[in-house]
Length: 399
Image (cartoon, rainbow, N blue to C red; front, side):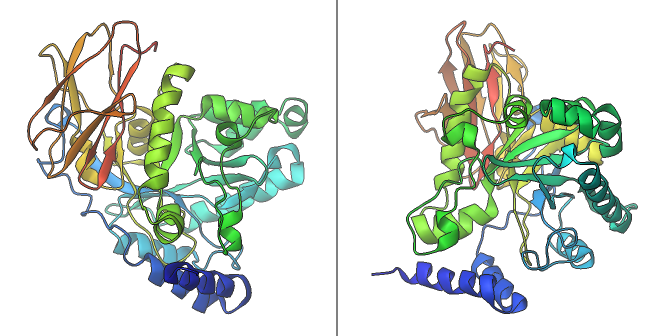
């Protein structure tokens, strides 16, 4: 017997596929209306770590679609509506991520089309004092291997370094050049695997195949996997439309992805930054990524994310701090070396700490926890604070 939530969602998605676009998106937005809405991204003293008082806490979204360039069949919002939605939600920043086809950088005509579409978005976004920070990026969409969010680089400069001919010969060059020009790569919804459901979309595999399937993989996918700085652990659409309605657990994919990153960090011997994205195609949007930034600018957002000074879903988790041997309290993203014992703490009503994927003994709110760490062994420490999840602090890791 079908569960009522699944049946209701099926009806909405059937409408999305074949009926009035406005009705179908209204139904989807209604199903998202009860999604967690974090407190306004203003940095009260109770949220900002004591050691990071020079930082501003900025709340925003890393994964937002807009039409055009996205197809109006899949995205109901134009640029004007998107701007109003961002303002209404009080976001400090948003990364616009229209879909672009895989291997577009190998075709001169496709390169020109993508560049023209993104340039049109750049001209359309508002600029000025007090406005949200709009970053024009894209979602590299490979239906066989996965999706990659890309932003902050000058695409023209990347093209100048890697011609279409060069990208045909060596497809990995594009992503390498993108990062070299200051770009940020985010592996989107890496564990969005198929589930048994009456809903066709739920049976689609939109996961990152280097996480979920044996290789070989194309050269550009191998490159993106090796150099992407961030992974989308919290996808609002996945959390609400898949996990809540179909799995009955809104934290399922979020916590599974964080646990996977806990295991990947020692294997890859490099930091992996968790971020969040609404993946919004219609009238819902949330602040999903919170950044401890040195300045309120696109550069401040980008640099804070690359440094790992982040938390997702709710800003409370940005209060997570770690120190060694009575030293300075350090925020998420920090690296501690040559330690045998560290102390962790956070401020919130409900606090839980992890070390290498294992939950530590809970302590009362406001109390710190001492964590023994092995010299020469990489320890990945993170926290859940109320509804939020912190980025990790790395202890004795080989980087």
